[in-house]
Image (tube, rainbow, N blue to C red; front, side, top):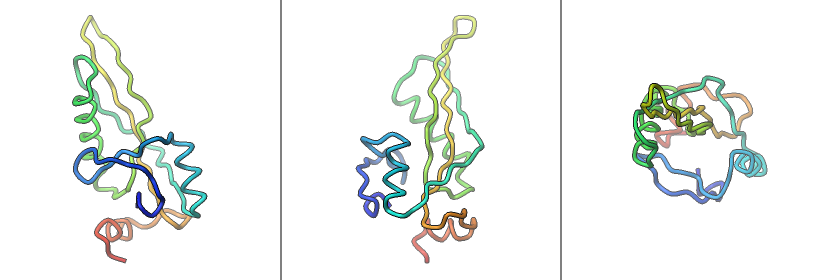
Length: 122
């Protein structure tokens, strides 16, 4: 999909990649310019970890979020917040995200269609 939409991305973990050089609005504009749709799922998914913020901990939190939504077969995940706080002097961070899905139809494809698209089946 990144190639079809001419998106710059780099591998992040598993078969997930990070889109580079675009925020959510610019990505949405680029997808719509290609006459595709960028669907937003309302449910917020969160993962929390203790300790200082670090790239490895954020990646593990995102892997946990991806596992939570894997059964939905959406092809995107938008990180909406990374919030570091303290409770009784103990640092912790909450990572929040929303599932997103890029597809040609303006109506959300069925889960069967999304599963087959993920396997390269038309």
